[in-house]
Image 1 (cartoon, each protein chain N blue to C red):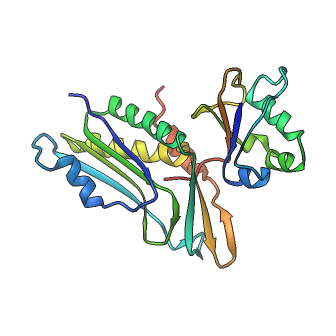
Image 2: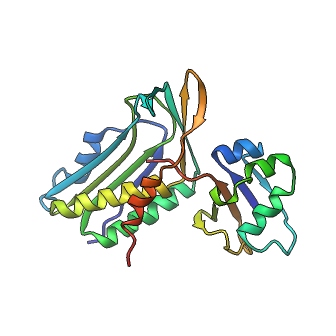
Image 3: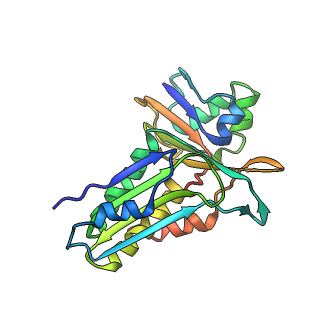
Length: 155
Length: 83
């Protein structure tokens, strides 16, 4: 059975419970569902922020996430995969990103979700800009995110 | 070829996209960065630290030594901060 990933790049919010149900409802072969939700924090480096503005590269965002989804499907025995990434203005407490993996057993679902999030952080063409009372500034990439991605590279 | 800029690279250049026709000796992504940088202060500012700049050809990440011949769309942007 071939599994196709669902990938959505959208401005609108998403419903985590609805996305889990879409992968598992009415099925008896799925034994594990792992979800990762990325949520906008109300502060960055200890300073309060009013919102994040997410810019993305339309076309490449879908293509790049699609390539990593295909790799995850080839490396782990998944029965379902959903990736949603929002763009535009996102307020503290709101959802930014969602990864849902479904598998027979938990290990594949955990590992695939972590792999995908590490790659989304460093390779998906999205850029966060923070808005605070001091003005706006681009958030800088973090070295530990690159290190987290590097550990998945095949020898 | 079409060139696109994102995030602070876009802000510094002052354009989201443009069509350029670089001379034939501009062969690689790195050559293109050098050539763009020579087009004015805004470009020189955007590309002042070329090692920080990431590039994509036709929606796929590439290294600075990637050959640009045949590319329809080349994009320049800072390291990504999604997720």
